[in-house]
Image (tube, helix red, strand yellow):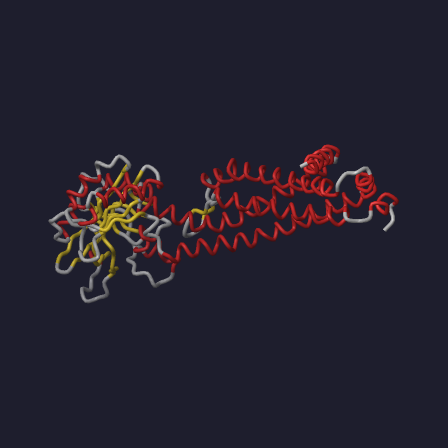
Amino acid sequence: MRSLRIGLLLGIRQIQRASYWTTGLIIFVMTLTFLNLIAVSGILVGLIQGAENAVRESAQGDVIISARDDEDFILETPSLMRTIATYPEVTAYSVRYTGAATMEANYTERRDLSGERDTASVSVTGIDPIAEDHMTQLSELVVDGEYLDPKEEGYILIGVYFLEEYAENFGDFLDTVSNVGPGDQVRLDIGDISKEFIVKGIVESKVDEVNFTTFIPEREFRRLFSRLDRNADQIVIRTETPEQNADVVAAMEANGLTTFAKIVTFEDNLPKFLIDIKNTFNVLGTFIGSIGLVVASITIFIIIFINAVSRRRHIGILKGIGIHREAIEIAYVAQAAFYAVTGAALGTLLTYGWFVPYFDENPIQFPFSDGILAADPEGTFWRFVTLFIVTIIAGFVPAWMIVRQNTLNSILGRK
C-alpha cells in the first residue's frame, strides 16, 4: 500500500512537470485511437442498423401479427383490433390485406389487341390510409403525385420497382410497366375480375418491401379480392419504445391472442443472415480499429521508455534513498493510465455528445439504408477496457526494463 501511495504521488508529479504540448499530443493520440475503435465498427454496423431502422419505421413496426402457420388469414381480426387498441403501450397500428394481381398499363393506347400487353405482376396491399400513415408515415414516401384520400375511391399508389422509369438502374430483370405517372390509368386483373385505377402517387423508399408494393384502400381491396370476412393478412404495431416489444407480445400471449394469430417482435422477425452480417461487420470493424490500438500502444511504449531512460539517474537516486522499485514502476503505469483514461473520456464525450447525434440527424446516404453510427454503450465500455489494459502494459514494460537495472550503474550513468 505504501508503494502504491508513493508511486501515485510520483506519477502525478511527473504529469504536472511534463510539457503541456507533449501531454496534450499524447492525449490527442489516445482520443483518436479510442474514436477509431468505436467509429470503424460503428459505421459498418450502422449500415445494417440503418437498414433495420428503415424497415422498422417504414414497413414492419415493432410488433408483427400474421396468420398462423395452419391458417391463411388472421382469425377474428375485428376482435383482435379492439383488444390491441386497449394496450397503453401501443401508439399506432395498421391492418393490412395483401394479394397478388396483374397490373396493366397503356391498354387504352394499344391498337393491336393481339399485340404484347404492358403488364407486370404486382403485390397489392389494402390499407386504411389514415392508420397506415400514422403507423409508417407512408405519405412522406410519395415522391410524385399525392397520397391516398380515404374519402376517394378508384386510386392507387405504386411502388417504384414496378415502373420502368425508376427501376431501369436495377437492370431489366424487374417486372415493370412503362410511361406511368400520377393521373394515368392502370388496370388490376385478379383472375376473371378487373378494375381500373387512377395512379394517385408514386412511392419510393430504401425498403424494398415498400418499393415492391402497390397500395389501395382496404374497402376496395376486400371487394376486389372477395375478402368480405375482414380477416387480415398482417397487423403491424408501433409501441412507445422498442424495449416494450417483448412485454407487449407476452401480454398478448397471456390474453390468448396467439389462438388467432402468430405474434412476434421486430427483433425476433429479423432474418438470421442479417444478424450474422451485423456481427461480422462488428468483428471486422474491431479488427481494423485494433491497428490503431497497436499504434497507440507503441507510442506510449516509446514515450515512457524515452522518459525513463532520460531520468535513469533520477530513478537510481530514488532507489538509493529507499524508494522501492515497485513504487517507481507504479509511477510510470499511473502516467500511462492517465493518458488512457483522459483520451477515452474525451473520445466518449465526442462520440455520444456529437458524432452519434450528428449521424442520427445527417445519416450517410447508401442505396439500401441511411447509415448511422451504431455505438453500443456496452461495446464502448469493453473497448475502453481493452485500450486501458494495453496502455497499462505499454507503460509498465519500459519502466520495468529501466528500473530493474543496477542502482549504482544508474546513478553513475554506466551501462
